[in-house]
Image (cartoon, rainbow, N blue to C red; front, side, top):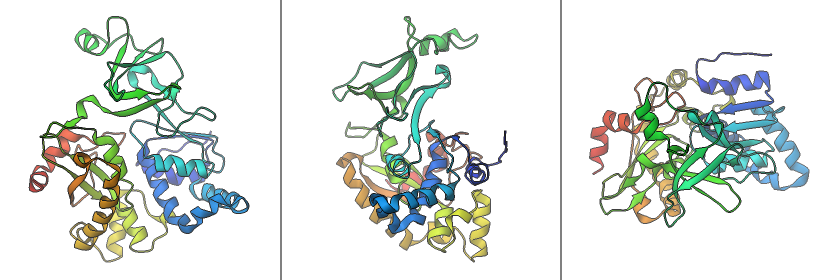
Amino acid sequence: MHMRVVSNPLESIDYAKEVEPSLFIGVPRIYEKVYSNLVAGLGSKVKWLSIPVLKGIVRKKAKQKIGFSNLKYAITGAAPINSDILHLFQKLDIPLFEGYGMTETTAGATIGYPGNNKIGTVGKAFVGEIRIDNPNEAGDGEIQFRGRHIMKGYYNNPEATAETMTEDGWLKSGDLGREDSEGYISVTGRIKEIYVSSAGKNIAPLVIEETMKSIPLVSQCMLIGDNRKYCSALFTLDVGAILRDKHGMDGAKVPKDPAEQLAKLKEFGHELSEYTDSPEIHAELQEHVDRLNGQFSNPEQLKKFTILPRDLSVDHGELTPTLKIRRIQIRENWASEIEAMY
Protein backbone atom coordinates (compact mmCIF):
# COMPACT_ATOMS: atom_id res chain seq x y z
CA MET A 1 0.00 0.00 0.00
CA HIS A 2 1.27 3.45 -1.00
CA MET A 3 0.52 6.04 1.70
CA ARG A 4 1.03 9.79 1.73
CA VAL A 5 0.12 12.37 4.35
CA VAL A 6 -0.60 15.83 2.96
CA SER A 7 -0.71 19.11 4.85
CA ASN A 8 -3.36 20.60 2.56
CA PRO A 9 -6.30 18.59 1.12
CA LEU A 10 -5.74 20.14 -2.31
CA GLU A 11 -2.24 18.64 -2.41
CA SER A 12 -3.89 15.25 -2.85
CA ILE A 13 -4.34 16.20 -6.52
CA ASP A 14 -0.56 16.28 -6.97
CA TYR A 15 -0.06 12.97 -5.17
CA ALA A 16 -2.73 11.33 -7.32
CA LYS A 17 -0.31 11.75 -10.24
CA GLU A 18 2.31 9.83 -8.26
CA VAL A 19 0.03 7.14 -6.80
CA GLU A 20 -2.45 6.79 -9.71
CA PRO A 21 -5.23 5.54 -7.40
CA SER A 22 -8.00 3.12 -8.36
CA LEU A 23 -10.31 4.68 -5.71
CA PHE A 24 -10.47 8.40 -4.91
CA ILE A 25 -12.78 10.01 -2.35
CA GLY A 26 -12.86 13.77 -1.91
CA VAL A 27 -14.89 16.88 -1.20
CA PRO A 28 -16.14 19.08 -4.07
CA ARG A 29 -13.39 21.66 -3.51
CA ILE A 30 -10.79 19.15 -4.72
CA TYR A 31 -12.72 18.30 -7.87
CA GLU A 32 -13.39 22.00 -8.51
CA LYS A 33 -9.64 22.60 -8.74
CA VAL A 34 -9.14 19.59 -11.03
CA TYR A 35 -12.04 20.73 -13.22
CA SER A 36 -10.73 24.30 -13.47
CA ASN A 37 -7.34 23.10 -14.69
CA LEU A 38 -8.89 20.55 -17.05
CA VAL A 39 -11.12 23.13 -18.71
CA ALA A 40 -8.22 25.56 -19.07
CA GLY A 41 -5.96 22.83 -20.47
CA LEU A 42 -8.48 21.30 -22.85
CA GLY A 43 -9.69 24.60 -24.30
CA SER A 44 -11.15 23.95 -27.75
CA LYS A 45 -10.23 20.26 -27.47
CA VAL A 46 -13.44 19.75 -25.46
CA LYS A 47 -15.18 19.62 -28.87
CA TRP A 48 -13.04 16.60 -29.76
CA LEU A 49 -14.93 14.55 -27.17
CA SER A 50 -17.82 14.33 -29.66
CA ILE A 51 -15.54 12.94 -32.40
CA PRO A 52 -15.09 9.15 -31.99
CA VAL A 53 -11.59 9.04 -33.48
CA LEU A 54 -10.28 11.80 -31.21
CA LYS A 55 -12.16 11.36 -27.93
CA GLY A 56 -10.05 8.36 -26.87
CA ILE A 57 -6.86 10.41 -27.22
CA VAL A 58 -8.31 13.36 -25.28
CA ARG A 59 -9.59 11.11 -22.50
CA LYS A 60 -6.27 9.31 -22.12
CA LYS A 61 -4.24 12.54 -22.00
CA ALA A 62 -6.65 14.23 -19.58
CA LYS A 63 -6.66 11.27 -17.17
CA GLN A 64 -2.86 11.05 -17.26
CA LYS A 65 -2.59 14.77 -16.52
CA ILE A 66 -4.55 14.46 -13.24
CA GLY A 67 -3.33 11.01 -12.18
CA PHE A 68 -6.65 9.24 -12.79
CA SER A 69 -5.49 6.74 -15.45
CA ASN A 70 -6.19 3.75 -13.17
CA LEU A 71 -9.30 5.17 -11.54
CA LYS A 72 -12.18 2.71 -11.18
CA TYR A 73 -14.43 4.81 -8.93
CA ALA A 74 -14.43 8.28 -7.38
CA ILE A 75 -16.85 9.77 -4.87
CA THR A 76 -17.69 13.36 -4.06
CA GLY A 77 -19.64 14.28 -0.94
CA ALA A 78 -19.91 16.50 2.16
CA ALA A 79 -21.11 19.50 0.14
CA PRO A 80 -22.90 20.26 -3.16
CA ILE A 81 -20.96 19.98 -6.41
CA ASN A 82 -21.61 21.82 -9.66
CA SER A 83 -23.15 19.42 -12.19
CA ASP A 84 -20.85 20.81 -14.93
CA ILE A 85 -17.96 19.06 -13.16
CA LEU A 86 -19.77 15.72 -13.15
CA HIS A 87 -20.75 16.06 -16.82
CA LEU A 88 -17.16 16.75 -17.92
CA PHE A 89 -15.73 13.92 -15.82
CA GLN A 90 -18.25 11.47 -17.30
CA LYS A 91 -17.35 12.65 -20.82
CA LEU A 92 -13.70 11.99 -20.01
CA ASP A 93 -14.61 8.49 -18.77
CA ILE A 94 -13.65 9.49 -15.21
CA PRO A 95 -16.15 7.62 -12.97
CA LEU A 96 -17.02 10.37 -10.48
CA PHE A 97 -20.27 9.89 -8.57
CA GLU A 98 -22.03 11.92 -5.91
CA GLY A 99 -22.96 10.47 -2.54
CA TYR A 100 -24.77 11.79 0.52
CA GLY A 101 -25.04 10.96 4.20
CA MET A 102 -24.12 12.00 7.71
CA THR A 103 -21.91 10.77 10.52
CA GLU A 104 -25.18 9.68 12.14
CA THR A 105 -25.96 7.45 9.12
CA THR A 106 -22.55 5.74 9.36
CA ALA A 107 -21.30 8.02 6.55
CA GLY A 108 -22.93 7.42 3.15
CA ALA A 109 -26.64 6.62 2.80
CA THR A 110 -27.12 7.30 -0.92
CA ILE A 111 -24.71 6.92 -3.82
CA GLY A 112 -24.57 6.96 -7.59
CA TYR A 113 -22.76 4.22 -9.46
CA PRO A 114 -22.50 2.89 -13.05
CA GLY A 115 -25.93 2.01 -14.38
CA ASN A 116 -27.61 3.79 -11.46
CA ASN A 117 -26.72 7.43 -11.76
CA LYS A 118 -28.53 10.66 -12.48
CA ILE A 119 -26.45 13.83 -12.47
CA GLY A 120 -28.04 16.48 -10.29
CA THR A 121 -29.00 13.91 -7.67
CA VAL A 122 -27.02 12.19 -4.91
CA GLY A 123 -28.11 8.75 -6.07
CA LYS A 124 -30.46 6.24 -4.48
CA ALA A 125 -30.50 4.80 -0.98
CA PHE A 126 -28.20 1.79 -0.81
CA VAL A 127 -29.16 0.81 2.73
CA GLY A 128 -32.26 1.30 4.88
CA GLU A 129 -35.10 3.68 4.06
CA ILE A 130 -35.36 7.34 3.06
CA ARG A 131 -38.41 9.55 3.16
CA ILE A 132 -39.20 13.18 2.36
CA ASP A 133 -41.10 14.46 5.37
CA ASN A 134 -43.93 16.96 4.95
CA PRO A 135 -43.13 17.97 1.34
CA ASN A 136 -44.30 21.31 -0.05
CA GLU A 137 -45.96 21.88 -3.44
CA ALA A 138 -42.60 21.56 -5.20
CA GLY A 139 -41.94 18.23 -3.48
CA ASP A 140 -39.29 19.57 -1.12
CA GLY A 141 -39.30 18.40 2.49
CA GLU A 142 -36.86 17.25 5.14
CA ILE A 143 -34.80 14.20 4.18
CA GLN A 144 -35.08 11.54 6.88
CA PHE A 145 -33.40 8.15 7.26
CA ARG A 146 -34.26 4.89 9.00
CA GLY A 147 -32.47 1.53 9.14
CA ARG A 148 -29.70 -0.51 10.70
CA HIS A 149 -27.11 2.07 9.63
CA ILE A 150 -28.67 4.80 11.80
CA MET A 151 -27.17 5.68 15.18
CA LYS A 152 -29.06 4.76 18.36
CA GLY A 153 -28.61 8.30 19.65
CA TYR A 154 -26.07 10.78 20.94
CA TYR A 155 -24.02 9.40 23.83
CA ASN A 156 -25.28 10.68 27.19
CA ASN A 157 -27.34 13.39 25.47
CA PRO A 158 -31.01 12.39 25.43
CA GLU A 159 -32.14 15.96 24.70
CA ALA A 160 -30.15 16.16 21.46
CA THR A 161 -31.27 12.65 20.53
CA ALA A 162 -34.94 13.58 21.02
CA GLU A 163 -34.50 16.63 18.78
CA THR A 164 -32.88 14.60 16.02
CA MET A 165 -34.71 11.25 16.15
CA THR A 166 -38.45 10.60 15.82
CA GLU A 167 -40.14 8.15 18.17
CA ASP A 168 -40.39 5.54 15.40
CA GLY A 169 -36.68 5.71 14.58
CA TRP A 170 -36.40 8.21 11.74
CA LEU A 171 -33.28 10.41 11.76
CA LYS A 172 -33.89 14.05 10.82
CA SER A 173 -31.15 15.23 8.47
CA GLY A 174 -31.86 18.96 8.64
CA ASP A 175 -31.56 18.97 4.84
CA LEU A 176 -34.26 19.87 2.35
CA GLY A 177 -34.62 17.52 -0.57
CA ARG A 178 -36.89 15.65 -2.92
CA GLU A 179 -37.20 12.13 -4.33
CA ASP A 180 -38.10 11.45 -7.96
CA SER A 181 -40.22 8.60 -9.32
CA GLU A 182 -37.14 6.37 -9.71
CA GLY A 183 -35.95 6.86 -6.13
CA TYR A 184 -33.16 9.34 -6.84
CA ILE A 185 -32.62 11.89 -4.06
CA SER A 186 -31.81 15.56 -4.67
CA VAL A 187 -30.58 17.80 -1.85
CA THR A 188 -31.88 21.33 -2.31
CA GLY A 189 -30.56 23.08 0.79
CA ARG A 190 -30.22 23.17 4.56
CA ILE A 191 -33.45 23.94 6.40
CA LYS A 192 -31.65 26.43 8.65
CA GLU A 193 -30.00 28.07 5.63
CA ILE A 194 -33.12 28.89 3.63
CA TYR A 195 -33.25 32.66 3.25
CA VAL A 196 -36.48 34.64 3.35
CA SER A 197 -36.29 37.98 1.54
CA SER A 198 -37.90 41.09 2.98
CA ALA A 199 -40.68 40.49 0.41
CA GLY A 200 -41.29 37.02 1.90
CA LYS A 201 -39.71 34.96 -0.92
CA ASN A 202 -37.90 31.72 0.05
CA ILE A 203 -34.39 31.50 -1.43
CA ALA A 204 -32.10 28.44 -1.24
CA PRO A 205 -28.51 29.75 -1.41
CA LEU A 206 -26.59 26.53 -2.19
CA VAL A 207 -27.52 26.17 -5.87
CA ILE A 208 -26.93 29.87 -6.54
CA GLU A 209 -23.52 29.77 -4.83
CA GLU A 210 -22.39 26.65 -6.71
CA THR A 211 -23.47 28.21 -10.00
CA MET A 212 -21.50 31.39 -9.34
CA LYS A 213 -18.44 29.35 -8.34
CA SER A 214 -18.34 28.08 -11.93
CA ILE A 215 -16.83 31.46 -12.86
CA PRO A 216 -13.14 30.59 -13.46
CA LEU A 217 -11.71 33.41 -11.31
CA VAL A 218 -14.06 32.79 -8.38
CA SER A 219 -12.82 30.70 -5.47
CA GLN A 220 -15.69 31.07 -2.98
CA CYS A 221 -19.14 32.58 -3.08
CA MET A 222 -21.52 33.28 -0.22
CA LEU A 223 -25.00 34.54 -0.93
CA ILE A 224 -26.46 37.36 1.15
CA GLY A 225 -30.23 37.84 1.08
CA ASP A 226 -31.86 36.73 4.31
CA ASN A 227 -34.39 39.42 5.28
CA ARG A 228 -32.96 41.69 2.55
CA LYS A 229 -34.75 43.39 -0.33
CA TYR A 230 -32.44 41.76 -2.90
CA CYS A 231 -29.64 39.18 -3.11
CA SER A 232 -25.98 40.05 -3.18
CA ALA A 233 -22.83 37.97 -2.76
CA LEU A 234 -19.35 37.89 -1.33
CA PHE A 235 -16.79 36.59 -3.83
CA THR A 236 -13.19 35.60 -3.27
CA LEU A 237 -10.68 35.19 -6.08
CA ASP A 238 -8.91 31.98 -7.01
CA VAL A 239 -5.20 32.84 -6.92
CA GLY A 240 -4.39 29.63 -8.78
CA ALA A 241 -6.68 30.73 -11.62
CA ILE A 242 -5.02 34.16 -11.66
CA LEU A 243 -1.59 32.52 -12.01
CA ARG A 244 -2.88 30.27 -14.77
CA ASP A 245 -5.19 32.59 -16.72
CA LYS A 246 -3.55 35.99 -16.17
CA HIS A 247 0.11 34.95 -16.11
CA GLY A 248 0.15 31.90 -18.38
CA MET A 249 1.34 29.44 -15.72
CA ASP A 250 0.73 25.76 -16.44
CA GLY A 251 -2.25 24.77 -14.28
CA ALA A 252 -0.56 21.49 -13.35
CA LYS A 253 2.38 23.44 -11.90
CA VAL A 254 0.35 25.96 -9.91
CA PRO A 255 0.97 25.29 -6.19
CA LYS A 256 -2.07 24.14 -4.20
CA ASP A 257 -1.11 25.78 -0.91
CA PRO A 258 -2.65 29.30 -0.70
CA ALA A 259 0.49 30.82 0.86
CA GLU A 260 2.64 29.37 -1.92
CA GLN A 261 0.24 30.72 -4.54
CA LEU A 262 0.50 34.23 -3.09
CA ALA A 263 4.29 33.89 -2.98
CA LYS A 264 4.33 32.84 -6.64
CA LEU A 265 2.13 35.83 -7.51
CA LYS A 266 4.71 38.06 -5.81
CA GLU A 267 7.43 36.44 -7.93
CA PHE A 268 5.51 37.71 -10.96
CA GLY A 269 5.62 41.18 -9.36
CA HIS A 270 1.98 41.40 -8.29
CA GLU A 271 -0.12 41.58 -5.13
CA LEU A 272 -3.56 40.02 -4.75
CA SER A 273 -5.01 43.48 -4.02
CA GLU A 274 -4.27 44.49 -7.62
CA TYR A 275 -6.96 42.01 -8.67
CA THR A 276 -9.44 42.23 -5.79
CA ASP A 277 -9.53 46.05 -6.17
CA SER A 278 -9.46 46.02 -9.97
CA PRO A 279 -12.38 47.59 -11.89
CA GLU A 280 -11.43 45.39 -14.85
CA ILE A 281 -11.72 42.19 -12.77
CA HIS A 282 -15.01 43.42 -11.31
CA ALA A 283 -16.33 44.05 -14.82
CA GLU A 284 -15.16 40.61 -15.96
CA LEU A 285 -17.01 38.95 -13.08
CA GLN A 286 -20.07 41.13 -13.72
CA GLU A 287 -20.33 39.75 -17.27
CA HIS A 288 -20.36 36.20 -15.89
CA VAL A 289 -22.87 37.11 -13.16
CA ASP A 290 -25.22 38.74 -15.69
CA ARG A 291 -25.15 35.56 -17.80
CA LEU A 292 -25.61 33.16 -14.87
CA ASN A 293 -28.40 35.28 -13.36
CA GLY A 294 -30.52 34.12 -16.27
CA GLN A 295 -30.79 30.70 -14.62
CA PHE A 296 -32.64 32.15 -11.63
CA SER A 297 -35.85 33.99 -10.83
CA ASN A 298 -35.64 37.72 -10.18
CA PRO A 299 -35.59 37.41 -6.33
CA GLU A 300 -32.69 34.92 -6.59
CA GLN A 301 -30.51 36.98 -8.93
CA LEU A 302 -27.42 38.80 -7.71
CA LYS A 303 -27.96 42.54 -7.84
CA LYS A 304 -24.54 43.34 -6.33
CA PHE A 305 -21.36 41.57 -5.31
CA THR A 306 -18.21 42.43 -3.39
CA ILE A 307 -14.78 40.91 -3.98
CA LEU A 308 -13.09 40.24 -0.64
CA PRO A 309 -9.37 41.03 -0.20
CA ARG A 310 -8.48 37.41 0.64
CA ASP A 311 -9.91 33.92 0.33
CA LEU A 312 -12.04 32.38 3.07
CA SER A 313 -10.05 30.17 5.41
CA VAL A 314 -10.28 27.51 8.10
CA ASP A 315 -7.95 29.59 10.31
CA HIS A 316 -10.39 32.52 10.33
CA GLY A 317 -13.28 30.17 11.20
CA GLU A 318 -14.90 30.74 7.79
CA LEU A 319 -14.57 27.17 6.49
CA THR A 320 -15.14 23.77 8.07
CA PRO A 321 -12.41 21.10 7.85
CA THR A 322 -14.28 19.74 4.80
CA LEU A 323 -14.12 23.24 3.28
CA LYS A 324 -17.82 24.12 3.60
CA ILE A 325 -18.58 27.76 4.37
CA ARG A 326 -19.58 28.85 7.89
CA ARG A 327 -22.20 31.51 7.25
CA ILE A 328 -22.46 33.00 10.74
CA GLN A 329 -18.71 33.55 11.04
CA ILE A 330 -18.44 34.97 7.52
CA ARG A 331 -21.26 37.42 8.21
CA GLU A 332 -19.46 38.50 11.37
CA ASN A 333 -16.01 38.80 9.77
CA TRP A 334 -17.25 40.80 6.77
CA ALA A 335 -20.21 42.69 8.28
CA SER A 336 -19.14 46.11 7.00
CA GLU A 337 -18.59 44.83 3.45
CA ILE A 338 -22.07 43.26 3.51
CA GLU A 339 -23.79 46.36 4.83
CA ALA A 340 -22.08 48.49 2.16
CA MET A 341 -24.05 46.58 -0.51
CA TYR A 342 -27.34 47.71 1.06
